[in-house]
Length: 336
Ligand SMILES: Nc1ncnc2c1ncn2[C@@H]1O[C@H](COP(=O)(O)OP(=O)(O)OP(=O)(O)O)[C@@H](O)[C@H]1O
Ligand SMILES: [Mg+2]
Image (cartoon, rainbow, N blue to C red):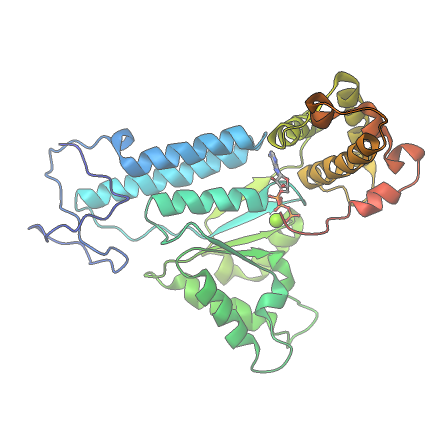
């Protein structure tokens, strides 16, 4: 008949039957279903949580059609894998190391968080956690410092996702004795560990990641899932702006929306344009100008005033003055 939620490992008493290679990550061996049993994949509790996350991914992130499809694929793969397990069909644990390639501010970190939630809901990792690192967190300055640093990062990420931002900096072909190579070797060992409960996501610009992987075929062969994050186009960036503004309980009035659209057109051509991150930064600065405007107002303010961003708040940007100050200030300053 129908299944128990396989997200929740049931403290099943070992059922009869040919046990598949006992997987250590499973605290208890599930009862094996009869050959003619029926399993409703959608009725499963874990599946419901996955659906919720996928729905949030759709609703909260604009565009990214290809990425969303790949996330669904990974979820399906795991769901089917779990179902197979319930029927006692043993197979090797799917390899789920991934690469997320794309420009700055295209949603890589945001999607990694959702991916972790899905992997966790389906029992592939122990916690829906993403530990973000860059080269400096892994590579030591001196001989003998790299291995402990990398192992510490691995320990902190254990049971979750290790997200290596700008992963190509680990590989410096111009320097033969670069410690980055040592990191790659340690990662490889960890990634090859069948019983490991760590997912590694390598993130960075498309072209540099391609070079990185072709120079490290061993690594590349352990990373079967590649998700490509495209730059957003103008309408998508507008939608992202609307979403962000609404999320913070603000709104653009009509002229403000037109002004922001114009702002984007200019900003997209400027240096250091960082997709959705630039949108977020621009909105932050609008809020600053709005605050300045409201505080300077010589009348009492209403709720309406507090939620409204006006064209003035947007056009106050130095970007409209044809110098690049605002653009420079937008240089990606930090993480999400
Ligand atoms: N498709 C989207 N819809 C709505 N908001 C988005 C979208 N993509 C990114 N954002 C927002 O833009 C900001 C930057 O996104 P995120 O940090 O995920 O990008 P990233 O690709 O990791 O950037 P970087 O390469 O600079 O680390 C976040 O505030 C995120 O919420
Ligand atoms: Mg990021």
